[in-house]
Length: 77
Image (tube, rainbow, N blue to C red; front, top):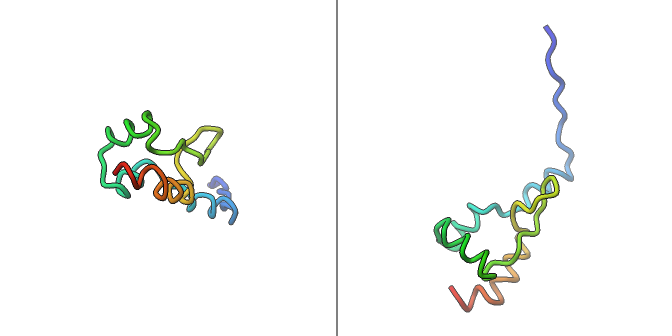
């Protein structure tokens, strides 16, 4: 019986994975619903997603959200 070889993730990819705030994390961080998060993204209240996986923007870097907290989000929430 043969088993498929699994590749161990590199330390770089593990670090990058930890540095992403997923949409659910944003909803929990600001105590908002999915609909509100989507609306905030469309209105520009949330910054554009800047964490890319496979060429697609999937989430935010923590420092991006912290900068938004100091700017427009702190005034509108």
